[in-house]
Image (cartoon, rainbow, N blue to C red; front, side, top):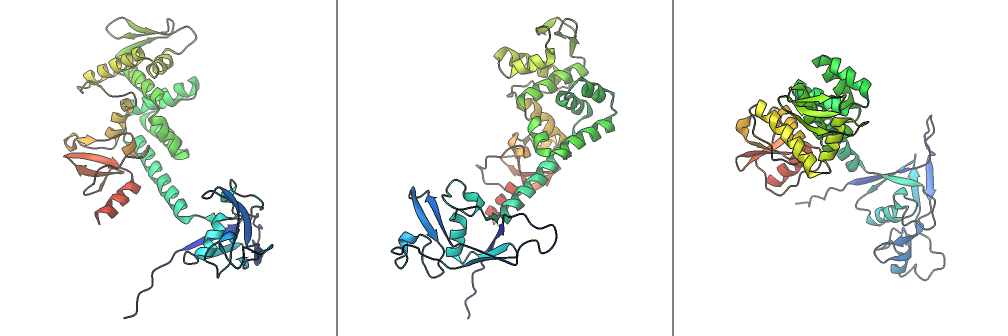
Amino acid sequence: MEKVQEMTKSVTFILTQKASPKPPFYPPTVTIVSKSKVFDKQTKKERLAIYSASATSIWVDEIPYLKEEKNPRGDAIVFKNGMLTVSTANKNLLDFLRVCGKNEANSDTNLSDSVLFREINVEKKAKESYQNIRELDNARSFVSNTEERQLRAYAIAMAKDLGEVSMVQRMSEYELRLHLRHKAETNPRTFIENLKNELLSNKVVLIKAQYEDIIVLNEDENTLSWKNGGVFFSAPKGFNVIDYLADSATKTANGLKLVRDVQDQINDKNNLKPTTKKKEDIVLEDIKSSLGLDESDSAEFSVESLGITRFTMELIAKDVVEKNGVWCFYQDKKWKGVSALEADIIKNKEK
């Protein structure tokens, strides 16, 4: 029986010169010199790389029939219509193109050449595109599913100025969701990163407490008071008292304790358990609840598990499923979240 050949992949390189606005976009053929002086990071020496189809190396000092020549010459490398596609089986050519100074990726090792081309990393682009889609999904999910008062607190906390704060306060629920959806879709990565920002999460707690009549802001005295008690925090004149306490909670134990006390009052009013979580976890409960997970699921998430940062994969997963836009697996009687990309990795491991 004839042996089945191993499948090979191809790598594409493209000229860096500006393409013409009309066809032909690039010259029909461009031949580049097939040798390049570079700094070899492995040997930490200057070396001359060359492409010779019959050689077993790209380094002149390792090719017996070339190393004694004063001006060694390699084989022609031709870009057609601005592109060159190389099979991974053609190791010499691929190695040379990835090492030589004409490749724009090698600015730190190039010693003599002008940049002429770059590699098109299709896999990297696909991965980045996929991650962008997941970030957009997470941002949209948060805006669509978060409870209105909580969402309004986030919108106020993220507002750039008093004018936007006033605008957010006047918005109906659906105007608010459309307003934040626009922010989420404009830059989903920044939007998600803002959600885990410690300063913003502290502001959200304080703003939400105002909406729930737990604390009272006295702008004239620049103080915060309990609804049924006395002043518990005051800020210097000229500072926004909520911003000042939110910032203090990221820097001092006393500030953090006050924000946690406010969070505990919110929890008490809503019949929730007191918080003993870190500062960043104040925001986490609201993101998790916006995903629609039942309490009976005993959901256990970290900020990373929601696609905000990478989730540390330390456990072997089973039955990866998607729950309201977040990939999860069930283990130790708890749901644990992962990104879609990591879900694929887990599935492949199980196979």
